Amino acid sequence: MTSLDGRPDDLELRDYVEVLRRRRITFAVTAAIVALLVVLVQQLLAPAPTYQSTATVLIETPATAVTPGSGANDRARASMETDAVMATSESVAQLAKKQFTTAREPRQLLANVSVSVIPDTQLLRVSYSDATPEQARDGANAFADAFLEVRAEQLAKVAKERSALVTEEIEALQKQISALTKRIRDADGGDVEVIPLEATRTTLIQQMAQLENQAVDERTQAVSVGTMFEPAGSAAAIGNPAKRFRVVLASSVLAGLLIGLIVAFVSDRLDKRVATSVEAARIAAAPVLGQLTFSRRRSVDELDLEDQSLRRLRSAVTAAIDRLRSRSLLITTPAELRGSTSALRLAASLAESGRRVALVVVGSGRDAIEHFVASADVDDTNIVSGNASIPVARHRATGLDILMASPHRSPDPLLSPKALRDALGMLRETYEIVLVDTPPALQAAEVFDCAAVTQGVVLVVRLRNNSKSDLAGVSALLQRTGSDVLGLIVEATGRSTSVTQSEPIVQGVRPQATFARHEAPVTTNGRL
Image (cartoon, rainbow, N blue to C red; front, side, top):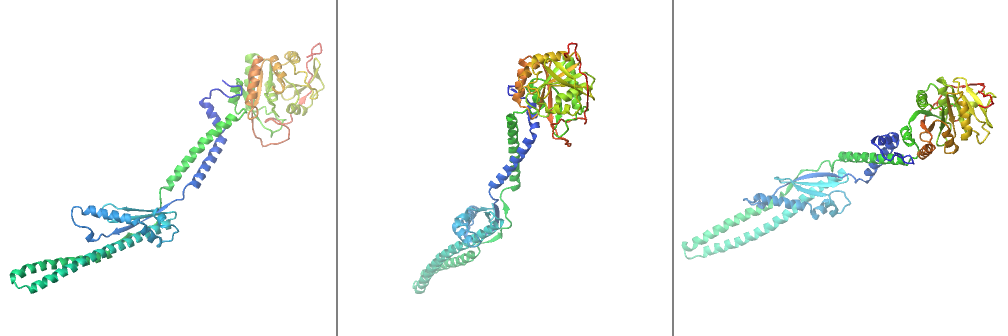
């Protein structure tokens, strides 16, 4: 089913495929432009690439900090986690800021730092992210060095505090030992009183020795806090830029295809012109008899009777005429088609096949046919029908007779049902086929009345020229008048390299078409 505006009520899959085929350029161009724009926008809006570099630090834990026992590993792990927290402290950031060139504040630097502990090791990873690889590398090294420096200060402070405590304990022990030594020296009770005092003094001396050894260890461990195990090297981009670009490209292509499809279907939906032969046949509810190529770049004096498309059209029209036993056909178009000579070419081809054919040109404004007839000699004999005087010209090569009213008479006397019926009745006595070429149906309402007089109608439709609504309207009106629409002649625009004149032209023919003088048949009463 087709609506009055020529749009199909139900679209099938092949209809969608046909839309894509004829809108392939729109689809391809739109898809390419959209895909390109999406890629550009995503690239412009995408954040700048971020680079990350990592320095590895070896933590040397003081022996005094880890007490042997079942929980030694847990305490060591806790110590490493404490160091990781220290590496991201503001004091480390303040020191790191002084070690590499940056305009950021310490707290801003901390946002780009991450520290992690390598499991079951004493290695600490210090990572720094920045917009440039150089800054990322320098930042990682600066934070690693700053961490070691701050850790050294912290351990030195702790060692100093412990050393002070040990010193106080040693001094206290020394006082006790001195007091015991004096008591031993002043004792009068003999060995019974001296021996316990000496044992106590010996124990205190041993404790003092242990404390002195511990103090030495504390000073040694304060110096050895850790080393730069592996400085930061070349920074790597965070994420996978190649993968991201592939995702962007894929999404852009999909967006382009989707929008291209939408634009193609919307533009086709909004286009009011007939686009294809299939569409024309569906709108007119009539078969396509043939498709001819129309071009404004070739001489009107050329008919190209050897054209295979024209021969196929002739065969289709001949078959329809023989099947329906039609002797007269009306050829019209919904709206004006400048330069159209489809009726002339069909008539000449039918005449060339050996049939007696007459082409009756009704109405004015037929520049192409007038130019064609004027290019050859036309005799002075007229066909008289009522008050009409119609000149006759015969195409010498094909034997086609062209009957045409004077271009200066308006309105055309034959553009009325009665006059045309009388003329056709007389012409059928002489000609096997009579083709009546009329003005556009929507410009001359008499065409519909004349169509009822003939035995069949052929509509000429030019793709990308005639509107869907015009074709649908003319088809509906012809059906209402009871006219039998045999089919359509579809004109498709084409290009030619030869340009001979500025007249409207049809792709086609041998140059120098000639006409011979021909006495038109006359009845006994002087009428056709």
